[in-house]
Length: 161
Image (cartoon, rainbow, N blue to C red; front, side, top):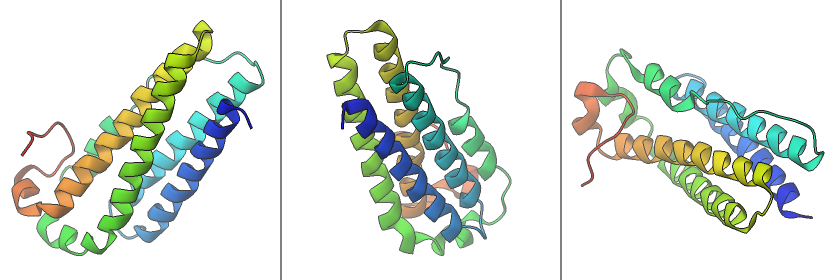
């Protein structure tokens, strides 16, 4: 298995994981977030498959992070809602680690690449996975410290503690 095939498998594994989390959250706003992430991972696998098959493709903008912001706007009583979710905190931490591993792999592949097109693809995937990482980092903070986020419970850049 070459590195691109490995990356395709990793993206499929991520899609499966996020679809499982979406199912676990089908009764709340997080369902939409996990479905967006699953679709992103599916799209990443498709891009990698096109690269593997030497088929032309374009790298487009991804709105997943902006769309997750919208999911959490005006959604009622966050304090109550997120007190029910902490049992899933381990799943979010696992997803965060998966995204970190993806970033590290794509950074390594980016550095090792000599072909301009594949280097561009891996650079693009690094940015995509960084967006996913930020979603989970913010979600973990939201679950761990809901009182601090209730006033403005949307995802975005947060100050470090």
